[in-house]
Length: 191
Image: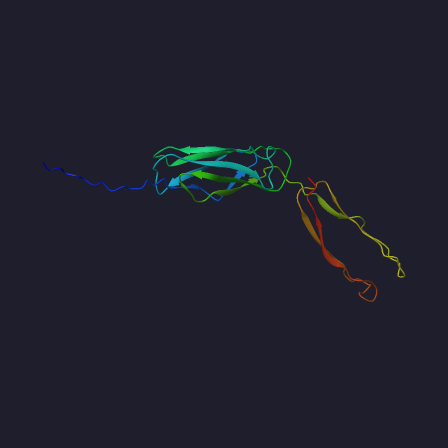
């Protein structure tokens, strides 16, 4: 009696690669929330898992955004999952701030793009203030001592601002009558 034997080649399962949909994203301070997708490409065989978590950079949770962490499970054939990133707005102006979303501890698949930087843009009105010299005129004795003029920032202090300054001859001439002075003043954010 004859028997027919069929040899079936064994094909290794291909679970694919997990990637975040973008390396950067922008989120408005007052919302709405945004989603990043974790895509499974190059194969979808079997069940795979990957952990995800947000982390502070210059933005701080929970004040600036809602933390997010957990594990995504892709069942056989599933190709994408979404993660929702939500801001926590306020009414104080501040510069743009960043946090990260990272994938880690992938099981039974490859890991591609695994981190994204999310920038929270401020939507509050910036009040940088006004810069003024402390006096419109000053008297300097030829024999000294030196005098000091102050540059005051009033009416607001949001953000970092700069202003250039320089002396200029009128009837006194530098360097014979006075020491010339020039440069840039920087006022840091005081919010």
